[in-house]
Length: 79
Image (cartoon, rainbow, N blue to C red; front, side, top):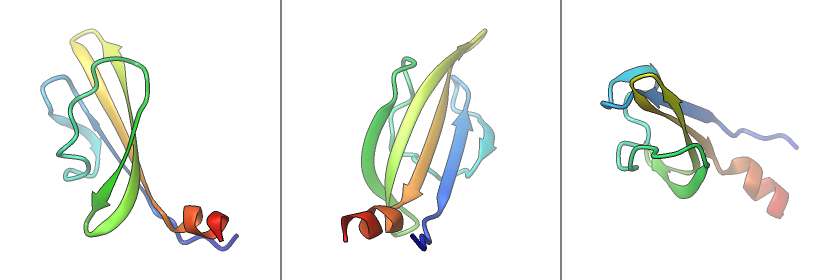
């Protein structure tokens, strides 16, 4: 596959403060409330993406880890 997919991420603490990653990624997603991954489809900067989010409990609450991948590689596989 000659994928042109791009991957973005954002990690925020329990109060929504950015720890690392892209500031504007997944702003419409609810914060993680547990360790089980949650998947959804949406858009980022006008491009369709697939989101995966999971939480990790750290001494002050749940940290949300959000990853998004553009859909080019999915389209190639479906072809």
